Amino acid sequence: MTTATNINPGVRMTLEEFFDLPETVIPRYELHRGELCIVAEPSLDHQHLTKLLIRHFCEQIEDAGAGYVLPPVDVVLSGDTTVAPDIVVISTERAGIMHPLRIYGAPDIVVEVLSTDRDRDLVDKRQLYAAAGVPEYWILDGDADTLTALELGDDGIYRERAVLTTADTLTTPLFPDFSLPLAQVFDHPARIRPQQ
Image 1: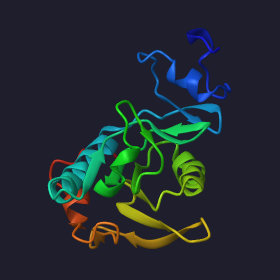
Image 2: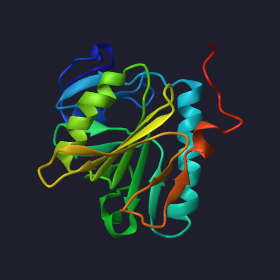
Image 3: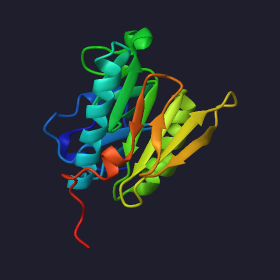
Image 4: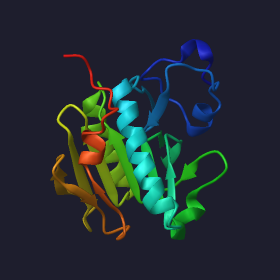
């Protein structure tokens, strides 16, 4: 059993041990293939971009009754992996994967807003989400003002459907009525950009 005194990145543990960690443990952790991983502290711009996306998702997906949109929540992808994506989107048809404390199974869409630990989102999580069968993985890069939409192929490998910029409109075949001009996110007047 892992105790609060040996909560360090790289520690190996089971899902049960992970979920027994105290809720007050800071920083936040995820469990990747049985290994404890620290989650980078999000910047204000990261949080603002996440909030803007969630607002648009809620207006077009939740309010339309097409699905559920959640901020970071534990998503159990396998018997030794749980993550907390920045945004989780689940269609109403797949609501059965939602449980009172966490999600068990692959959401329809996961969104990660890149932070200081870019490799974790670009490499590690890409592999984890593909292995779990997440149909779409979106990666938002606030530094470059781009959103990369990855789509899972029949072979279990993600392929870029699009790399979108401020001039583009984000859509998805999973929610045909969803449409978001990305200028409403990247050029939002209240956006908190890092000091140069």
